[in-house]
Length: 410
Image (cartoon, rainbow, N blue to C red):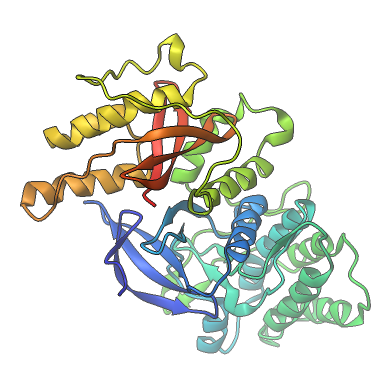
């Protein structure tokens, strides 16, 4: 049976299904934050999910779908929390609209060309670019989604060929009465004449698309216009800055302290891969174990020297402080233990509210044999035993000290 709440989001309805997963609309919090919750089918290998996560992290472009968080379902497998793209797909738009204007074509195609250029530079191959996988944000910005078949490394011309076919499809929808019709016909002829697609193809397409006319908002329904249109830059790449996401807020404070070779997008891909280990690691390898002995009263002075570079020691006090917050039914107290906006914060806040309503039970954690499984800059993955079951926890180091981001019972 499907869980009613995943990653702190209440599942409302199914948004769509594919060969690998079902995607649900999730609501969370009093402000009714929304997200697209991607739940994989049991037969999908963890290696396939990890490949998708790494591709999402490495792509890292304003016009590729944003991974907001990563959680774990009841089956112990990763669940993706993605941005919700409200306005449907390009395939739906083309089915609803008989024709597009040249300005709309610019708004649709230029950002996608920029996204493919960025993915190519990062070694990411999407592998399945179609009109059905181009979705639109509420602002009207096109976003490339559907990274289930993506790969990192060994980029080929598959995406460039698919982008060319998609561009031809969009340009065919222009009206002969459009002032840019002749230019569009010339652009279609250029696309049709190509036998090979060089690495510079997406950048060339972007430049030629911008030469058609000025970008204009995409009309999705009568009298409804988007307001997010691309602008030509010195490199012909449209820039539409996305709203700051929780994932960005998590990583940004640490970038200055991470060696350049690990900075985004590679750092994000590495961190996402480590998150996948939360559900994959059951018996830790390497490292020394440290048994935590609970004390009578928890200590929450996290910024002391003992915790400066010791996530295992910090976790001892963190978990005791977390248990104390649960006993006291204090959501405010959790701010000293859990990372704000994290899956752990959403889960424990929901737990406290359920206890207050009388329909929940106190869930305390008593970890033993804690090990450092992996360290990535200011993030640390720990494994331990709780009630004789293996479990994992991800800690992040903030200016206030170490905080718990997510944990998974075995």
